[in-house]
Image 1 (cartoon, one colour):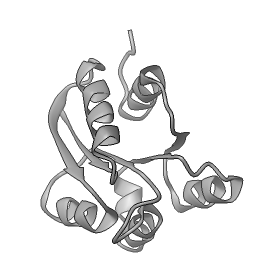
Image 2 (image 1 turned 30 degrees about the vertical axis):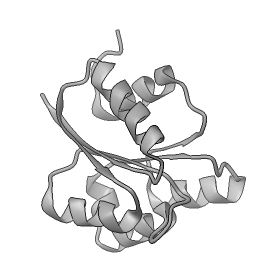
Image 3 (image 1 turned 90 degrees about the vertical axis):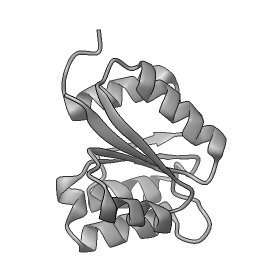
Image 4 (image 1 turned 60 degrees about the vertical axis):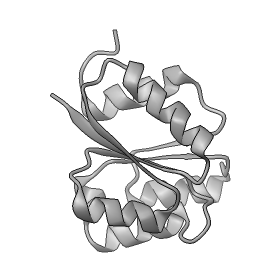
Length: 128
């Protein structure tokens, strides 16, 4: 089975690293879409079938926090798993995002193993 991913982060380096980890994770990849902010991410979500979203919190134009709020208003969080990857690891932010329905909250810097583990926990399959 091939999965479609959306990576929403204003850092092109972070997007590239996550994209590379997804590619080597042994998860079937259909497509990987990228957005620099939440607003661009929502536009992609309107047009493409996405199986899993990776999103940063602190971004210009529209933050990941605002994107999550918009997604929850439209019921998208019930259908589409979101993983937050952010340098903002405050307990309040983590609790708020988890209460909003995100599946996981990872702090930057992250390890490839952590991303792979999350992929297999959410999408199923074996991490071997």
